[in-house]
Image 1 (tube, rainbow, N blue to C red):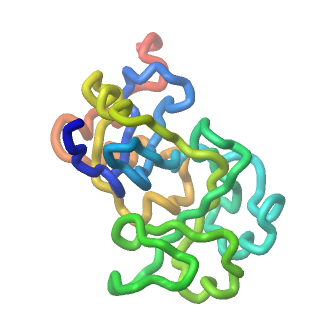
Image 2: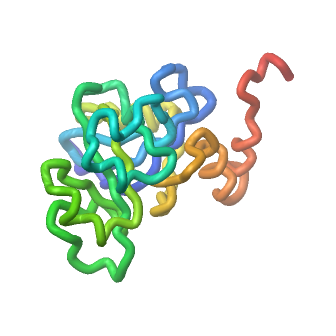
Length: 188
């Protein structure tokens, strides 16, 4: 198998052509991408479930909106957390593992008070998006996703329903124009 160039830490932005309803206008942060497959979380799928309803100890640390997000269609009964740790990019606190830049995974078994002073923002996800070896590359070849750079604020945007358009708008050239693509093109 040929070596896969890692896309860890980058965003997958669903193209209007992507037909899978699980990923309609989704923005996925890739947490891991290598020869064995890919794993990420959908950043713009808030649920009505409050963080306090399932992980009470973490509720005070969750950013707005203080709800659990559907990270993807896989393992919806499991939770993972992302947090942005502001600072110089040095070693993060115990219970936090850097994914990319200031963004990292939080070990939810760590007592929240050990991380509280270091956290810049926290978001909880139920489930994740996963691809087997070569699967994401095939989707990319078919034009299902745009791959763009992530920014720490993408993880904690307070109005996640606008993230798809916002990420596209900040791109250069023709890709920025995709942000104006109508929700229902048949109404044009």
